[in-house]
Image 1: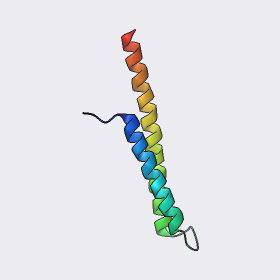
Image 2: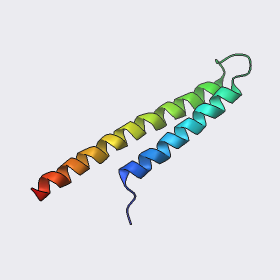
Image 3: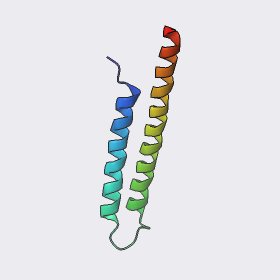
Image 4: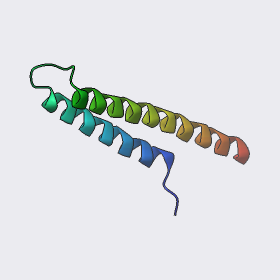
Length: 69
């Protein structure tokens, strides 16, 4: 069974939120340390992938509706 792009997007959003939370917790004195910047980068990548997967979900849905017509 395949995993739909929408389920994958939800997973990536949750992962991005988790990385964001950990990045906020790891920022003790300054934000400019390696761990905080790395976690924020991973969170950004996860959110971008989630947006692209949501876009893909709607394009697939639209293509399936056009086939039925």
